[in-house]
Image (cartoon, rainbow, N blue to C red):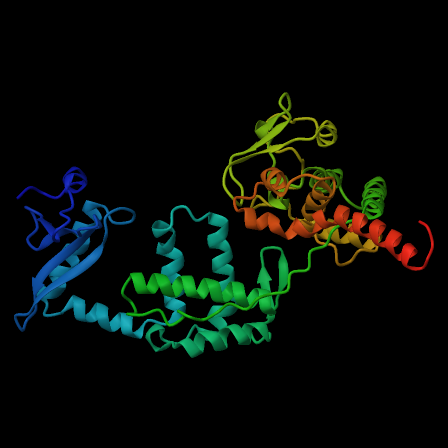
Length: 410
């Protein structure tokens, strides 16, 4: 038998009819298991002190388990066996006693390797939700002890604010709140983590199966033309008074003129802009790489920010340590307060861009393309805006009929 190497492992082909074992020629008991589906995992075969044959799974081939790392782990397992320990029994006992907090640590550490297409920002959000809500309410519970009722109760507890508190954050103290939206997102993250635990055989069944997520009432805010004029006037005034930085004012105007997401404008780089063709080529976004139009009014905004040597970003002097524009939310608070629109969110500028496009007769398909929506259903929130011209026709017709009913001529 040859020594297990990456070349040997890569060459091992799956047999659709049965499990395939490839044993290492150097370390007795160390081997590679290939399932009929092609999943490759490193294992250690051994006998307990009572003579029972066991097969200890080290982990799947690939990050973090290379041949050399798996061989080192196999040696540790075999040394434990020589000392009279049954590693598989210990592993089973550890899984039985694993707490939700420990599972959260494992999920965040090893989950990204199993879901390589999930964006780092999404994993950061998962980590924040687990820290803010799952750990305080369920962290000390054992994973195997969780029931469907526990998951449902967790969601309601978060919605009612039982995990709400003030925490230390990168940008100062932050209020962790409850509500249906937060509860649904936290529960969705918990469900994904428990699905991970099921795939790792930490638990046999996912206790969150069948738990329905709370529906939050979405209130979409669309600006009118008068409100757009008011907002633009306020942004200019606050910029002139140096209450907000020119970079923030530029970002707010770009959001109004392009329909882009806040994060896309925060991280906008000069190399992504194709001024000649009037395009912005985002290498990554919430929905992956995309190309979005750069309207001429938006291109004029960019001329106010000359490119600086050694700085790839369009908007200067505002980027925080973690690559985010640290004071942007505070600047926006100044704008909406001065405009008398305290409920207006930055994301509503994107909604308003779409609402103007639809009201002018653009199809939902084209609006979705401009916004970078992958699913047509995402653009459907603007469908009702198409009814405005129909309403005008209906109103005019009804007025004429009503006049006739009163015996008058329209």
